[in-house]
Image (cartoon, rainbow, N blue to C red; front, side, top):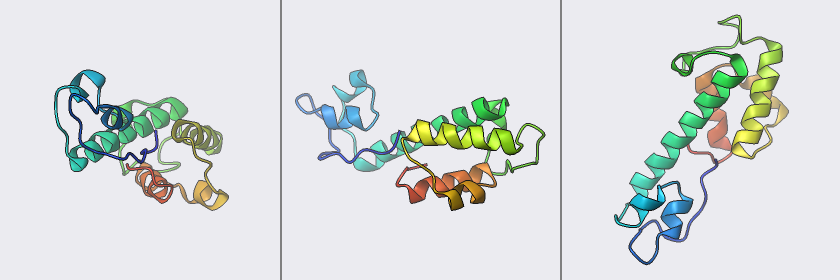
Length: 123
């Protein structure tokens, strides 16, 4: 999920929708005030987990292996076919379309995070 731009980052009993849109669970959003920083951290954590899920699914590896130092061709599972599956998963999972140069440049999990930031995805 890409970060959504919301009008208000504060949540109270009467105005919870912006916090819910930003990824705060509805039950929590209804009874607590959140700062913009906290909400960005929640969304960022959610996006990193989403990226780990995509890598794990596309490469057929455990999420614990999806760390910044994981590199293309460093494991047998990350070959050219899996790379394209990974690209499709990122496109769909973050509702973006990676440019060809970014597809070629995505050489590690850490690099994928860097590339996603260019598409305004907080990871």
